[in-house]
Length: 151
Ligand code: GDP
Ligand code: MG
Image 1: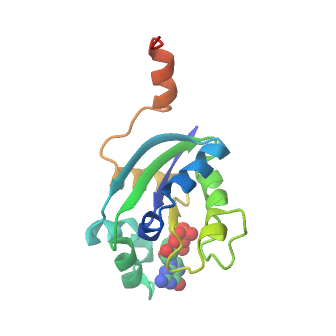
Image 2: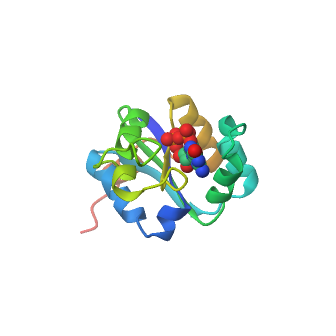
């Protein structure tokens, strides 16, 4: 079992497609571990994308990420990182296949609506950046198994 960090970027939140994106992850078989709507300040955006700080588009990227609310999520499942990347599609929506999230919802690399960690190490780092406290694996299943039925 593995975890990955996924984030609906400000353009995705603005366009009202959080639910559609969550639906795709659920449909695929991922389990939602944590979710929150939040805003990102420049420091967090710069830290999150620190590997890209030398890129010419870094300033534009930080402005994009801090332009509105994001939806930060932890999803888990077998090969969660690679499965999420496959679901999300290539970085540039022009190259992202139809059927992937970016292929179906985005047109421009500068506003590609969703982020997914690129390795298990990145996932751990990013989860640590965005979430203070991690929930135990499969909290929903654990809750359902542990709770007596309501009726
Ligand atoms: P990802 O892992 O598929 O998100 O791609 P990268 O880690 O290479 O890049 C991170 C993010 O930077 C991408 O998702 C885009 O939002 C943004 N980005 C990448 N290339 C460009 C570019 O050429 N121009 C701009 N404005 N943004 C870019
Ligand atoms: Mg990346």
